Length: 516
Image (cartoon, rainbow, N blue to C red):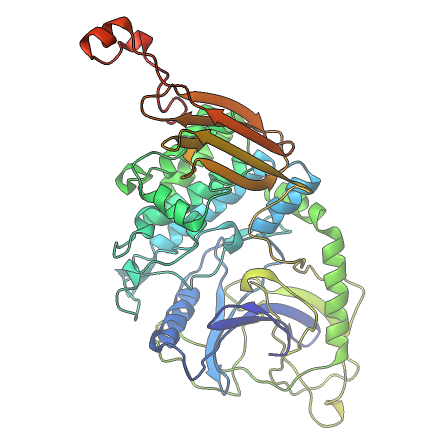
């Protein structure tokens, strides 16, 4: 496609319009790239994703509309959500609104928990699929301007129906939101890995910071697989209500048997807590907040879509509908295939009014390619139907004054940032010392990171065997360089005489005073 909007090694996504008689509808097209050196499992994995997308029918999961293949290979058409990724929303909210309001953050997480619960309980032919998303992250959560919230992209998922052997034990997903068992090679994961990931999303939304800020991927893996518990939310947000702190801690237990049993249980806990604390939000409040952050972006993209539609239509056709029960062999091209319209689609299709210069009684699928539109993380696309034959073949659709709700576009961001960054450097001696920032071990005696300027109070602790533990608190409000030199512990008189360790009342501070 001329205006593909993103993709990875094996797929690309495009923005296109589904053009009906008097309306312009929007949908998402994900197309598989099959080169000569493509891995044998790539087609099977794509087919698995397509089948799951068509099976999943829930208000909080982006619905698959159709799938098939043409001369360029397989593709999947997914419902279009007029909104923004959670990753971008929190970035913009940090810059313009001082962060994401707690009621809105809780609303979004509860919605995604509901979608995950449906996915985890999905059945095919009355058999549980044991589906695990394995890539729950802010980049794969879309929030609409109507207040809807949906989970997208099941390309990394595993299930009983997977046609790829050993996929459940393969290391897949976003390392920054990966569960401890997911980071271990050869360990099968279950639905509780998604619970952990969603718990981490909740922790970060309420904390206003990243859990693994300033750490390398290797450090994150090491931290996930060690025995130390993750920092409590309270260490970052002292005024967080106890129930919310407890929910985060429960979801983020390293031992999966100690977590919520499933996403539905987590959602119920959040629902009861938000009602009790008065932290509820309505879809209208969520949608209005998100829309207020992206007004200019929406207007700019609307203009691009109008220009692209007015510029003309392509003659590229799409294959026929793929049945949810199909095997991994994708169906062949059918010139009579149709993408579901708003009347029969399993998911919503956004609408823009269109006036035809010369209406035609004959239709076929076409793609309207929208040049210059860039969307992050392969989530949005346009597919167009309805072209004309004979004298009407060159007629161009013209969009009327009624605006379309469209997805705002801005460069991809994996985390939200403040307008400015500050550099934080912390050094500790002796070389054997361990350094902790907000309860997380840094893995080095010299910690250096660039972070968003903020006003949160961060806990810093340094410890070493035979030395007094030192703790301090700092605010990342400006560039800071801190040196912590530990002092050797002085044995008590009794300990010196007997060689015994000092008694508890005279002991140095606990090595883990702020670790839950």
